[in-house]
Image (cartoon, rainbow, N blue to C red; front, side, top):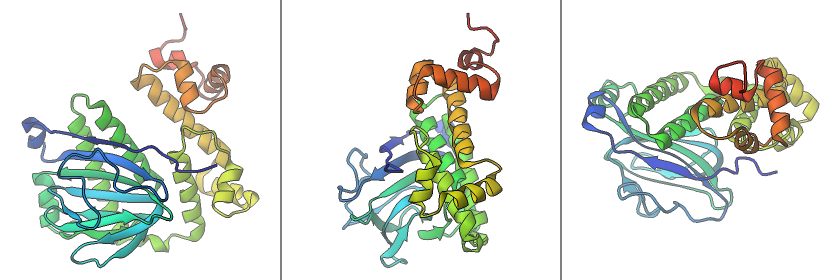
Amino acid sequence: MKYNDLITDFTYLIPSEQDHEFGSVVTSVGLQSIKANTPYPVQGHPSGYHFNVAQGRVLREYQFLYISSGQGYFSSPRVRRQKIGKGNLILLVPGEWHTYYPDPATGWNEYYIGFKGKNIDNLFDKGILPKESTVIEVGFNDDLVKHYQQAIQLARADKRATQQYLSGIVMYLIGMVCYISKNNPAEVGQIVQKIIQAKVIMQENIFKDINPESIARELNLSYSWFRKEFKNYTGHSPGKYFQELKLSKAKELLLTTSLSIKEISFQLGYGSTGYFSVLFKKCTGHTPLEHRFGRSDEA
């Protein structure tokens, strides 16, 4: 089983004048899943974003770039080829040269979101975050991954008021980064880091059929120890926790997409539509169609 075997998915947005009046806008959001020994960066980025690793680039926006797996390197005028890897977040600032790339031997999973605006400039001018590009150790953070994934989905749908929703996610991320940067994640015990790493694996592989035993092996842990500590930390066994993640995603897809029950069941890796429907009703008290239409009948 290969974990974090994600697809590359990115969106570039063009905010309106009204969006800019909100004080902050999001211009780019995406995920790049770079396999070992494959070209980097991937093709398809517009001018101003695509760059040559050797030459680097200069952005016209701020970016938060989070590495959830793999490792690589980052360079800027103040950072001389620093090794980075899973758990690192790179803050990129406008007007400053930089370059970064995954180690060909490992590849990496890279989440990013670009943003700008007068409210953002004000936060940086007041020293809330540093004015230069830098690497911040945030550790494994499933909540961070969840918000990146939510931003990617919102940007892809691009409905009315999407910019305002995305701006709220950016402010949440800024607050999270401020908190983490002032509270050393190294102080978090190794046990907790392992549990959070397992949660990130589950979050990133929600559309796959994986089992807790294989996650324990991926983390070089005995399953009995992993199951005990995971339940102590989360209140759920690993299997139950992953099931709840899948059901939560199913609820979201039922309410926000026109996908059929069969398609949702297939996407989430369930063996059959019948099994999915029975499990959904057992855990939620109503059928998938009842959840979708908010009624107690399926007529």
